[in-house]
Length: 391
Image (cartoon, rainbow, N blue to C red; front, top):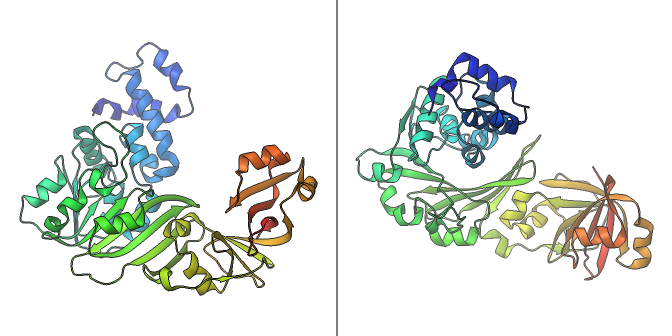
């Protein structure tokens, strides 16, 4: 961490050159004595990435930005704020703290939080930024968080872990046991130091696989932002032996949430029926959760087909996803699709034999416009096209 970057003149240069071509900065002669052009570019590029993802960091003077990779790997402020709303804990340990976005938001609800980060420079940057942000109830440690906690007698109300999902060769891994730290390996030992574990995993982790690797799972949350799946969250309670609650949460202008017991999907019965006046498309969090029959049953909707995760009704209802007014339903054939050639439409494929790209090419349908076309399979097992407009 080069503290000269925090000098007023250099901070002004970074702020005033956020839209500058960074390659031109790299090719110039050294602009400052104590800071290289490469370091300037790193700050500029990371600040730009933080602008929307970390607005508090971006808008706070004298914040020191880490490499772009660390910005990409950290939680957004939006997801961190949501996670902090789930906890009731006075003493917290963040064992894989990183830049400290989650730590910062947890600290708003806790008396004290210990932040552990093994990467020396990143730990220094987090420590500096916490001071700038006036987060005075956070202690930072440049140490292995798991090793530290297991070798000390201190207990916490909650331990938070965001395991590194890259192996020693920087390749992505997806099993929890392949991540660092290996949470399943240390689970029993960690429960000797806390009542509750809060784990953030890749959204690509299979929920059933996570259930095999973990125990005492109380909640599983598929978390999306503006219909993009971001995280899979696991809340474990030392004494919990019941059925986990599965939640699908999408953070947007209005938060969408649906939840039910994990085992309810197996016994739920979804009514299959013809396409009616309205069509419903689940958000990404709901799709990840797999609560396809439960949602149909609770919202009194018909599924289009057992394997088509689209829903329909004659009356407009609230729904955790997108809602559409059905204009017409057509059988998928050359004659019917002729009317759509050289027009614009937004296309989705659900339980359909072709891809969006192939459909656009074959039927010459351009992207955009007011209409939404769903290429899918209906209750009679027929390939159809449903023309709709978004509500």
